[in-house]
Length: 239
Image (cartoon, rainbow, N blue to C red):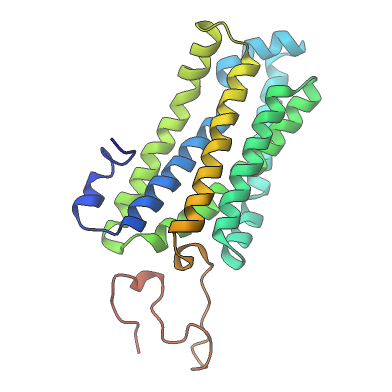
């Protein structure tokens, strides 16, 4: 049973391409991974407070650092995705976020823990600027809302996963919080490697390359007279 069998069945039933289904699945999975990174702290706040001898308020500041880094790097990642390569933004987002998770898992001091949260926030900042245009260009207009819904469904599962998985690993399996956070990072690392290799081999540059802005006054300009993102269903561009 594939990752899209339940929320994405409508996409497959309407004859969309294998590339579209693949992109929706991979982007949705990346959304799941990024959202698990965002909520690693809440299930282990009291454990972290005891280990690092800090207050819950201090841990709240660490979470705020993650949010601030996330906000600060939205526009840089948007610029990267728009002007260079969406796949680069996608991969860099997963790589930096995963690195931040490992820094958190290995942090010897509270200061390093906060640095890991900052790095995690920088990485997660890139997933929306990369995901949205990739999905838009890979999906026909009449199915685009459903494709985004699949991504949103998997992202919501990502928010719900750490309270269950991390708590189970720490409370039931007898592992430490470092093992639990490290396991999440290891999953993200494997997912990133498989996803980027799959994008490289099976997803066309039409989906991952930035849009070329045509100069409508110059017939010789790149992209002049070609269909834009909203014309990918076969409709001719306005003449």
